[in-house]
Image (cartoon, rainbow, N blue to C red):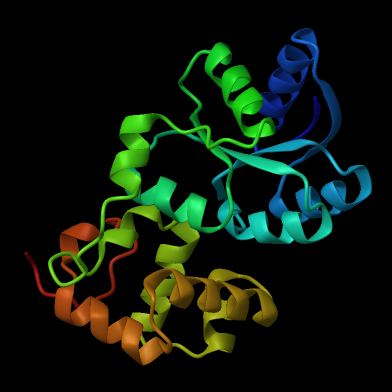
Length: 224
């Protein structure tokens, strides 16, 4: 199988490439971030892409549709340090064909690639059942918080603090266009249409304990 491997850890990319090559697969390209993966997918048209979830620049799931746009036949199999129903649900919603935990033996990854290449969902049945369970937002309006990357938490903090796009960019050391993209991705993930709605959601339903300790906004959230 012709494969594209994308992960921000270069050592892992090299190790996976070597092991998958030993199993008879051809690594047509590697990438260290989602943007590189999209470019490589356009150029090489791989049969499958192994794609990490979390990158310093954002969530890898956002690249799935972009990869399919330039290479429609590429099956995207997500790699993650841990698996839960919410994350798998989000990955499948973006068009992923499979989901594998990095802690699993290499055989699980090989099986997942084979299953995905044949057009089936390569996801553990129990996790898939949980992923497809209806999410009752009235009971748990913030269940998607478990899928936020650290960068998305930082952007959310800036939104709760009332910062403009330019001030978010300055605060987080990024270009304004990058900040705007992060804001839009975050609003989409939370299912809201404006920063005000995102801040109101956190004020109404969030608690200080759900935030990463070093990212919590000051004097905004009530405690549980």
